[in-house]
Figure (cartoon, rainbow, N blue to C red):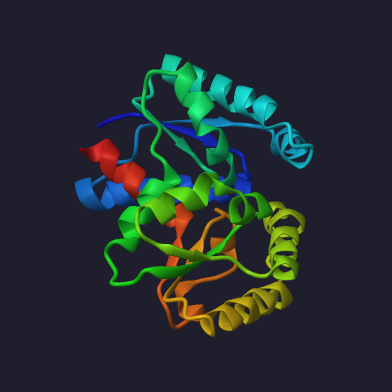
Length: 229
């Protein structure tokens, strides 16, 4: 079994999901008392969020690169960054290590390709929705990406940072998210990407009638399968 190097803590609420899903997949495949061989480096999200909000992406890249390098030194065979937004700094991290990074957007493309759809909504932090580092991978693979209107993007972002990252699951916020998704359905979307690892704590497939792509689940499952190859 390959050793998985997890960079977590962004937030630690969703890092729990990664650890749980990875071990569940390994157990399903190997049975018995089998669990995943993984190493977790959990960063201080307060520091990372400060660099995000002050547009100091280079500093956040350096923090995550140091984490990745330490995981490599500890014997990890590949890196999993337990966050969508921080994949913005993957090119820099790649320049500092020699083991591969399992990219969350590329794994999402793999999941999308199992469905006969091409127009999908992307929900996430304002960075993931508005910047190109994540959307470009989806677009280059033939998907038409729709993001919410500006006011809705701010609401989605606020719920992520002020509630979900703090472990607060608010039914009112869930209804707001579902209202946004329903309005986007009128634009012809055929699926919804939960492009933030915390949104899956709030929105489930049973809540909507079109396919839901929870990137934290997708990413964790693919990490486990890669470890088992």
